[in-house]
Length: 287
Image 1 (cartoon, rainbow, N blue to C red):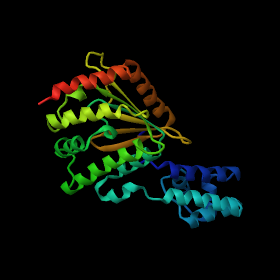
Image 2: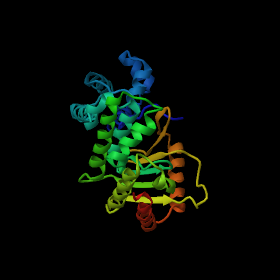
Image 3: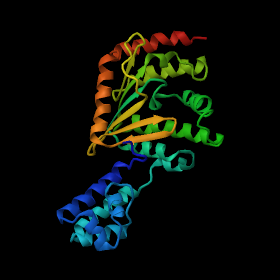
Image 4: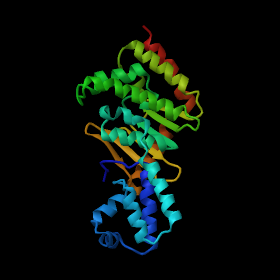
């Protein structure tokens, strides 16, 4: 089953620690809730990071579990980290909750594996390409106030800067269909600059691009997806369709997408050959 929302890794860390402390006391979630006069659902949502507990909630839980002041201080520090707002919060009005959750995962991931059969992956898009995509392709179907378009483009560019060009950058492995290189988004000038940008970004050690040509047997019929890897949390998969962004955290389901990406890597062109194809296709967009 796909989750409607995805808690950030920091909130997941908090929930896991509270669950670990409860389990050391042999309390069940229902017993802890009964002792505190809470619903069992509240304890469950805290431990699964669906709810950010207040400091009072944490103090009550740890007093029940017999934790000392040092442990309480440590958990409250985790809670403080989990409550911190990301840079993207200033764009909150323009971003739906699924996208906000996605950016939160992206900001803390150490590796991102992205399959895109239709468009250039978001972290590799130029400003003009992103503006044309959001305004001319997505807007007619999933309409948002025009004033939000600028914020969404700006947020996309900031994401690129913060995760690909950071001091400890995200490792991005992007596979996309060869038709993406010849599919018009904007105009010829937009496409030419986009391909030039792909060629430039390919120089970065933390970025790997692979292309699946149209002469290759159709590798799979699934739509775009992202497989996130974290330093100290289970992997997460992200799916996007017309209804919004969905997340998978179930280990079996996420592993299915990990294997799918591994298969795409096997049938895609090598990195050097993919880059040559990008350069060769630039001529297609010459005025």
